[in-house]
Image (tube, rainbow, N blue to C red; front, side, top):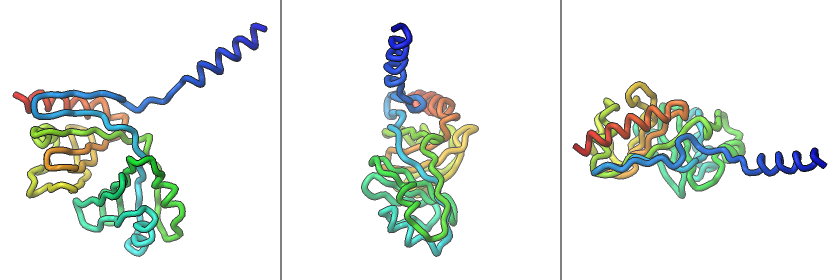
Length: 194
């Protein structure tokens, strides 16, 4: 009888265990800027030669960008150009871009990195100043317009930066650096407000 009760209790405990994303729900608001963790998303690191782009674009439902510092977005899915043969695919609509890539027979490499990366939103009139506190890139609208994407650094951490609006950015970083990146952005937000 005691064994059965222990098994039932263990089953109930394991059923209630839920994996939480790094820094889930963390938000900081300061005058002119809000820094917050974004909900989980599906992510794929995609490598492919030029000859495979049409087939991959069709499978992913958007045209893979072919120019430096560009991105393409359609129906909750974004493709960010990171290099001549490299893209970061982010799907926030609950679809599986890795499964979509698996259907393509053209030469490519697609690796799921959903659990490796996290997204942080930096939004508001002081968003560019906040990001620039640790990122040396020129974030003026002329140099880094809406839709611009780049692999760069923030402090001592590598990030992928996407400008989602005139006053908003998406910062992608490895989850192991998420506390550092979030804290740096939070401190910068406080400084930007002064």
